[in-house]
Image 1 (cartoon, rainbow, N blue to C red):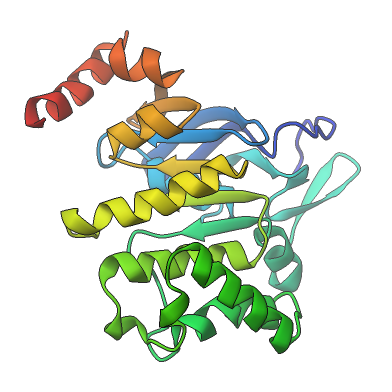
Image 2: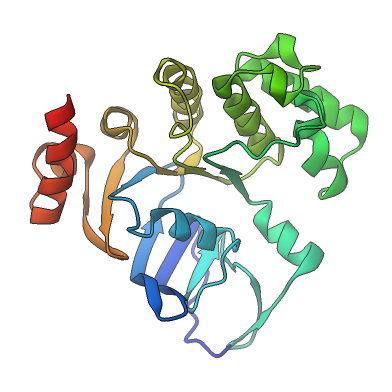
Length: 265
C-alpha cells in the first residue's frame, strides 16, 4: 500500500485521514478526516446507517478500510510502515496494535461460559501475556471501579444488561488501552439501566481517558463530551463544541436529526 505518509504526532492518539469504506458498490464512509486529541471525549451522533459504527470498527481494524489511513498512537493501524510503504499485518502484531484501543460493543459480547472475572482476564492473559495472578488482581480492582465487586463469579446470564455492559467496560479497561471506543453502549439496555452505564463512562472520561463514543444519549454528549461530530450518509456534516452543535446546529441535516430528539423530550 503506497501512501503519502506524515510524521508521527504525540498529541493526537487517533488520526483519521480521507477514510473510505465500501461494501461492494455501497460507500459507507466517504472521505472521513478526523483527529482526536489526547484526553478528549468525542461524541459521534447521527441517524442509523450514517457510518458511525463502521468508523469505530475501522479505528481498531475490525473493518479494513477501502482507502485512506488511520493512525492510533502514531502507528498505522493494520499496517507496518517501511519507508513510504505500508505493509499489511495480522496475527499477534495486529493484536498488539488493537490492544491500544478498548472496544465496548452494543451487545456486550461477553463469553457466556465464563464468569465476569474470567471474561476480564481473557485478553491480558492470552494476548498480552500477563500472569494470571496479576490479571486477577487487576480484574477485581476494575470490577470494584464499575460497581460490581461482588459479582466476580457471576456468569453473564446471571447479570442484568447494565451489569453485563459494565463488565464489558471493565474488560476493555483491563488491556490498559490508550483510547476507549464505545459503540452505542446503552442502545441494547432497558431505559432504567442506562444511567448506571453512563455513570461509569462519565467517571472514565473524568479520569482523562481519550474516548470516542457513538451514542444517541444526547444529554451525555452535551454534559460529558468535549466535541460532537454529526454524521450522515458517510460524511461529517457538522462538528464542534457540544453547546454549538447540540444547542445551535447550523446544518439542516443536524437540525432535523436533533429536532426528533427534542420532539420526544
